[in-house]
Length: 392
Image 1 (cartoon, rainbow, N blue to C red):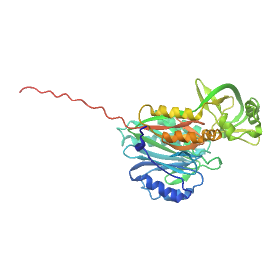
Image 2 (image 1 turned 90 degrees about the vertical axis):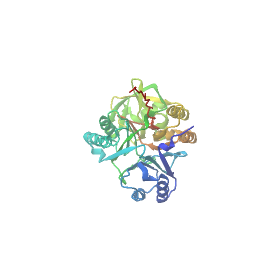
Image 3 (image 1 turned 30 degrees about the vertical axis):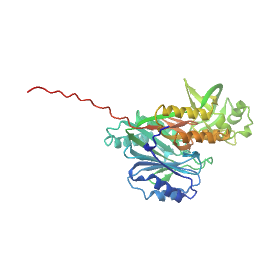
Image 4 (image 1 turned 135 degrees about the horizontal axis):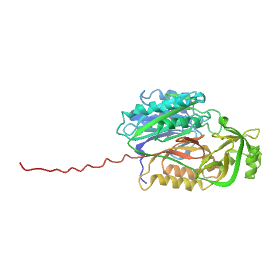
């Protein structure tokens, strides 16, 4: 297959020494002509050393990024790596901003940020009609649902795609990167203008079943479900699965997701963990009265392969920036399919990270493979001239 690797510049390092990893990445990126650098930082790296390494970059070059629950790059699924993507100025113009104090942000603040970033790009790229937004958020802020709703209003028809920063499987503290500084309780938004054709995508490998349950007691702000069908949530979920409540684990949650079905569409509401009192903590807000359905998985490897092939079509491979839920990775590992998934990801040259949640337009979702596919600019149509002459 042909590829469009030239649309992005990729660099990565698995060196355990953070300073060495960053030196290799910055050398490989050759950042002088880039419009944006995105860093995905795996577990074990010294964030202060990354900040120090970034001080040597041109001040006009924005750098964003986040900590991860796993990285995606050459070799597919990675751990403990730093993966970098560079967007060249010849194909991209970028405006970047951030929101701090995310747990107390106002919708107006988010809308104003999106409006300002779009306005910043309007006049410099009037002849580039394709605009998308890429969002990175603190994955433990519990604010993604409210944030994407507010941002999408201001972004109008421009697609919004993003991911929630991770912390491996520790769920301790997650960080986003902006202006050379790692932050918690924050989000970073990049608005991109490009002559490239861009497709925003979201897919999952889950099919809803007819096994239903009703949320009878929940705290949406804390993403807690206390009761299902009038019973303690964890034990009731386990009963429906035929499992021992004491054996509930991230692998069980990944293999037995629940979805909310609206019309013909379904949205995954993934479970993060069970609390000591039997309460279920979700990755997104769940309202009392919501009807949930258990879902079953189709073949994860075959589904991913077919979906990525569909993005490629009959032409060259697009450059793909992906946000892949940690629960999909856990399922791949639990079913011993990690190496096969990695082969597929490498074949389609996917770069990105494993998340605590994905954002797609006005929704915060889970257990999806979500991202942006970039294709080369379409050539300008040739103009045909007809020359006529007259006699003197």
